[in-house]
Image (tube, rainbow, N blue to C red):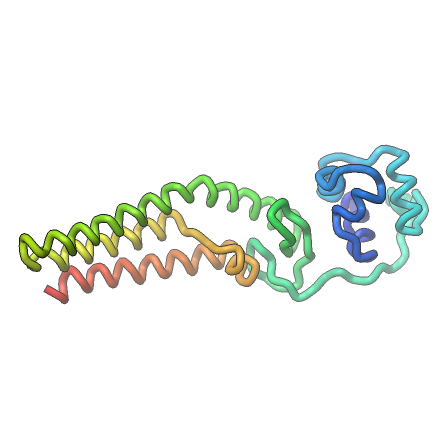
Length: 205
């Protein structure tokens, strides 16, 4: 077990948030997060404060001797990345999420960055699809309804394609299912829209 993992285990065992611990030792929440993910290590005076707060020796904190048994913080929360249960609660910048391990946590961060980057294409694609659909419905007044099923069906298929290429997930869905399952569910719904568009184009003429 690394120093960061021991700090995380002690903090959660004592029911402290990263903000709470940061105030106690006089650092920022980001510093606590970096300690727990082994991106940096606390200075010696902070090690002394941590050992005093957690009622453990510095040797136990640094891993030179075995720590006593601590209350388990493993719960029944789904991992925010893979969706598996029995994940640990870890604080992210946008709230508290559960993760199986650090690999899932890093994968989640990468997936969220990609989702934010692609969100503009998601909204732009849906907007174009809606505009085409409305334009087709309006133009049918003048050119008749012959081409209306093709226009509506085509715009619905475009919506489906956008959702398949740029799956968008709500925070509530991610917390309940994990980002991987949420993206899969979004893509399945996109495929459903593709089929609905085909139905409009070829069966409602």
